[in-house]
Image 1: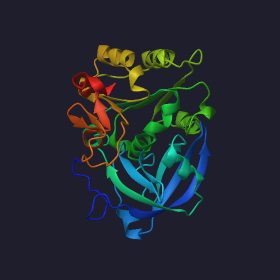
Image 2: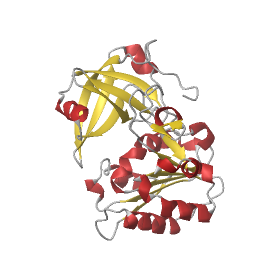
Image 3: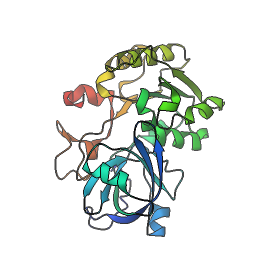
Image 4: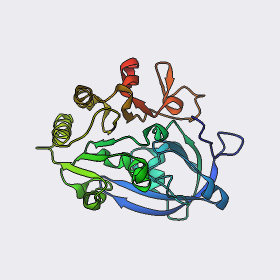
Length: 284
């Protein structure tokens, strides 16, 4: 856990009681859930890193991992974005506001915020994965003076069709972040055109590779051409980061369900580097 406290009761598998405060419909059949603990002290003390995840239980149905999309710089509410795709997510989508749920966590390593401070940051997202960097994006913008040049390059057929795509318009108006949206030429199930457009967007963007962190959001199988370009430009292997959601179940490295080679996604991830990808062939 890299020193990040786990805000749970002494039994690490025992969830804390919480409620669904608000549900907002987003594109692509995704719902944004705002959650709040019953314990007010826990609401104020719950801390996490961008990139970490929590385990949420729907009472009587089951438990599943979800990435936190809100920022630790804005405490009091926890936000997750969930697509209906299985038993737990369907039950979650059917819950009404104020419904009782269970939360334990946070889990995982998260992005290395302390190492990233004072560095330039590239935020690169492929189409529907734009929301995956929301927690990190908000954290950086809320602590803007702690980071160097921040550049966002995203691909989108139409921003209004993306979860949180409405944020792209006002991000483009800010003067403290360079924002570039690239439109793929056509629907692209293989992701090749999305990656080509991301690279084209980067070519039009001035950035100094040395010391820069490049954070990728997308389908990992699509990453290789983008990795090649970043390495060619001189971005360090350990500074090319991405998040990998891989069947986390217990969240504490006990069940082995999320193992990748000799590592566990729930403990050693879900944030990995290009260096990890080269030494763990099962990553993609």
